[in-house]
Image (tube, rainbow, N blue to C red):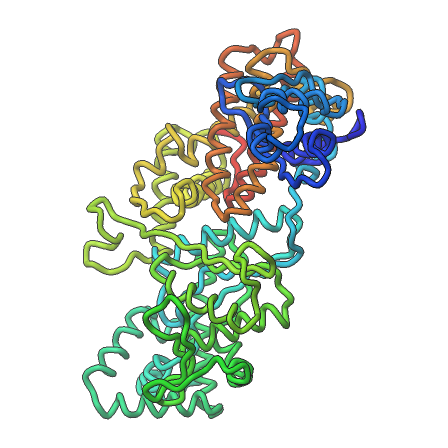
Length: 590
C-alpha cells in the first residue's frame, strides 16, 4: 500500500489489504492462506488484530520452515507489513496475535475528508450489481396488520442498506392477488353491487369485514360456493367482466396498502402473483423437460432429497399453487430481470417452503450448489410480534391489530409526550406534528429492527417510546442534542470543514473517531448477513461513545472548540445516515 493511500470507506478492508501484502511476503510459495483480520475487542491491545500465525504454523511446520513456532510467524507478519500512514504501531502478543494500532492523525484526516466529500464516499461495495428484495407482500382484500409490519420494516431496511452499498435494488411487493379466494370475493361483489361500475372504496367500506362476510357465505351456502368456484375458472380464463371486478378489488386494496406505505415512507413496486401467471406453464415445461417432474396421486410433483414430502407444482385438478408461482417468479428474476441476489423476507414459519423450492431450483441448475455463490437466494425469516401476555399480538376482541391503527397510536402517544414537555408552546403546529410522527413511527421501526430478526419480540408502546435506553427516542434526542450544540456555538460548520483541522488527542475523542470509521464495515456486515440489528447496535454504541466524550470534554469555549465541533458534526452525519438506512426520520431539535 502506498504511504499516502486514501481511505475508501471500509476500514477493515483497508487493514486486510496491508496484511494481505505482508502474508504474501511471509508465506512460502504455493501455500494458500486467507487473511484473518478482526476488530479488537474493547480493552484489548490494538485496534485490529491479525490472527493468521497459529493457522499458518500448523500448515508449514515440519516443512523445512525457518520459523520456530507461531510467535515467530507473527513477528514476521508484523515485520513484513508495508509502511503506511494508516499505521501507528504493530506488535505481537501471545501465540502470534499481531495487534495493529491506527494512526490518530490518519484517522482524523479521514474523518475530515468525509465531512467535505460526504458520507456516501464511505459506502461499502458489495460483489453484486442487482438484487431483488421481496418483502411486505400482503394479500389483496385483507388489511395489513401487525404481522406485515416486520416484513415491511426489515425488507425496507435491507433494501436501503443494499442501495447505499451501490447495488441496484428491485423492491418487489409480491402481493397475493390471484387464487381461489377471488372467485368468492367477485361473486360476493356482484351480489352486493350488481352495477360494478359504482363500486368504490367507500361503498365496500372495511375490506376486512367484506372479506369475512364473503368467506362466511362461501362456507355456509353451497350454491354460493359453487358460483364462486366457477368464478375462479372464469377469472383465470380471462373473462373480461370477471377480470374487471378482480381489478376493482385489487385497486381498493392497493389504496389501503398505500396508506401504510406512505406513513412508513416505504417504496415498493408491485409485481403480484398474477404477474407471473402467464409464464407458469412454460416454466413447468422447462422443469419437466429436465425430467424433474413426476406424477403422484394425480398431482405433478418434484421429489427432493432430505424432505419427507415432495414439492407439488401442479395440483390434481390441474391448478397451480404457491410453489408454481414462486418457481416462476424466481426463473423470471434470474433470466428476465438478471438479478444476482434474491432476498425473500417472510416469517420463519415459511422456512420449509423456501428450503424446498430453493432446492428444486438448484436441482434444475438455475442456482449454484453453494448457497453463498452468486446468483444467490436467501430466505430472511423473522419471529412473531407478541403482546404483553406472551401470545401473538392481537386486539382485545382477538382480531389482528390493523397496522394503520398501530401507527396512529404511536404518533398520538409521541405527540402527547411532547405536549407534556411544553413543546406545543415552543413549536409551530407543523413542527409538533412532524416531530411526533418522526419519533412515533421511528420508535415502532427501531423496536423491531434492534432485535435479531429470528427472535420473537414483545410489542410495548411504553418501552419503545421511552427516552432512556436503546430506543429510537433516545437516539433521536441524542442526535438533536448534537445539532443543538453546533447551533449554540454560532459557528458556520461548513466553513469550519474547509478551514479547521480535527484532532483526536484524547482517549474519548479517539474512541469516538475509531467508531465513526467503522461505519462502512458495519453496514457491509449487516448487508452480507441480512441482519439489520447489527446496524442498530452500532448506532446505539455510537451515541454512547459520544456521551462518554461529551461528558468529559468541553466543546463550546474550549481551546479545541473547532476540532470538537467537527467531531460533533461527523457524529451527527453518521447518525443521520444510520437513521436513513433504518427508515427513520431524524429530528433536529427537542
